[in-house]
Image (cartoon, rainbow, N blue to C red; front, side, top):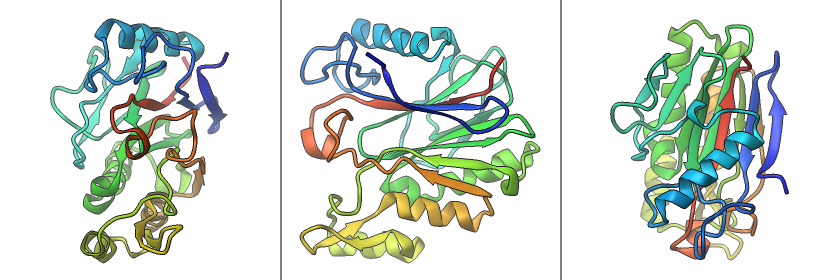
Length: 245
């Protein structure tokens, strides 16, 4: 059984992938490949799951780099010898081969970026709040300052709750729409909704990112993915990106 539902080459060997929720050690309601340490699951099970994910990707567990996500826009540079950010961040980038940048989600979108020519990759955690505060444009700016070029960048927006399923109050829709109008939509039942992936695609295009792809799966509609909106108490799956050794 594969622990990674999607893998792709973004050019020159740059790899991206998204984990599923099967094949791990966690018990219900986290069954079974929960990768989040802060959702109430047994830590030993989560660490075993992270190790299994690393093996499935052909990596060492120590090469997986995790963030303490807080729905903000801070960006961290992952250098050699730094196992994790010193504080909470919602985006990071690196030019270090073999270091995999991981984003934990269960309805928010994992956004993975790469400039294969500059050998720089980045990852961002972007839900409703991250979309509104501009975490993805902040990541693009940080990668550009480090030598990447937006026109050469390739972006993949991972699975997230879709606009058909993501109902929000009208005032919240208006608040987000004032910043990113492309994110506003109607749900399947005609109520106010937000399309996170559409909003992120618009932000990426506005920053000049040359190639933008989306996984397209809705977390709430896909039983092989975790969804907080669907299940409440649940686990987290990951999006990850890395440069080859």
